[in-house]
Image (cartoon, rainbow, N blue to C red; front, side, top):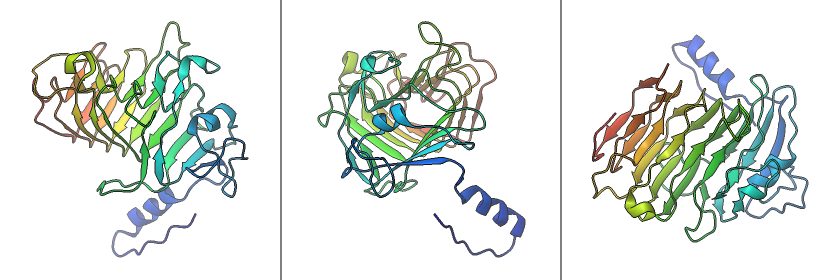
Length: 279
C-alpha cells in the first residue's frame, strides 16, 4: 500500500500524518473477500471468506497481524460457544477469542471503509443474512484488537451491536485493550426485550478495561419511542475512552458510564435525541 499526500504549511504535522498512514510491513497480512473461501491461504491473491476463520488461524509477527476485509456484504455467522476457546454463546459475525499484544496488535479493518460519509458501499456485516444474529461482534478473550471501518445495521431482533467481556468465566485480561473506530452501527434491538434491552449498541463489562471507542456513528439502538433507563448508545465504564462519536436515538442515554466508572474520558462527542438524556 502507498499513500501520497500534498503538504503545504505545517510540514511536521504532515510528516507525522504520513507516518501514521503507512502500514506496518512487519505485521502479518491476511485477506477476506465475499468471493473468497476458507479453504484458501488468506493471502491477497487467495483470500478467505470469513473473519472468524482468520481469527482462528492468524499468527503474530513482530508488529502484529492485519486482517484486510474487502468491500461487500458478509452474511456468515457463527455460534461462538462452538469456538476454541469458546465465547459467551451468541450468534455473531465473529468473536475475537484470540488477539494481539501491546507491541503486536491484531487489526481487523475494512479496506474500503465508507467512513466518514457512509454514502453506500464499504464493508457491511449482515450476520445470518436475515437479522437473526444476537450481535455483530464479541471481544471476550483476545486483547489488543482494533476493529474499524464496518457497517452493521437493520437487525431489530438483535440485543446489542458490540460487546466486551472480561472476568469469570473468562480469563482476565481477556476482552481488554480493544479499539472500536470509524464504524456505522444503526437500527438494532428495536424489538428485543420490548425495545428496551439492558444493553447498549456497544456494551463493555466493568472488568473489560482499556477500551477506546472513537469516530463511530451510532444511530437508533432500541425503541426510541420509549423512555427507558436501560438501553443506551454506549454502555461502558472503568477506564474507557469515548471520543468523537455521533450518538443518537436510544431510549436511554447516549452514553451510560456505569458501573465502576473510574478513569473514564468522554470528549468531543455529538449526542442528541436520546430519550433519557445525553450522558
